[in-house]
Image (cartoon, rainbow, N blue to C red; front, side):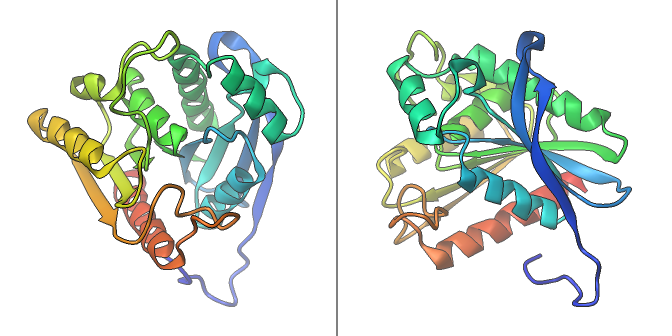
Length: 251
């Protein structure tokens, strides 16, 4: 899908911050981006990473919108107060993170919000990087109704339980209800290649629909052009795989 647009096309997107009713009806912020026009468009719930609801995720949302998707990126830290993304993320980490139950409720509400839009085609995917990758696997297991899921180097899928994350996502594999694409760097330490192997074996045993792809020369966060982890060749191949996956299941 990269550079497949026509140079005389009138491609345009609409984007910005708005509020929606998240889990338990709480009004929380979300960054929303969508193509201009009547649609119908498939939807994506974009789950931000541990560094927070930041500018990088706004860019990701706009990229998906530019490729024909209506996107909502909930601010999962909204209830923890406001400041710069770094300030809020530091506070959330000090409090032990966000409870899985709250993340799942906010993402389920975001999925329903997308489907309720008049320009929806009725299909919704879920995707996230880093902790958002872990959350993607968890959400696609706890919440029914997603049509596709993408885990980008989700750290903590294989982990010891905590108070706010009482069940490891790998232990929810039997409940995974969406086809799962996983993209990982072989130099990553969270998840390690061995943990990716363990996750893949669980998916095989449960008979789930999935694809895993692993990249040599890439570690954690290899999409992130704002830091040294960025690997352009691997990143662009991975973006294409994501577009192919969502194209297959959300069109």
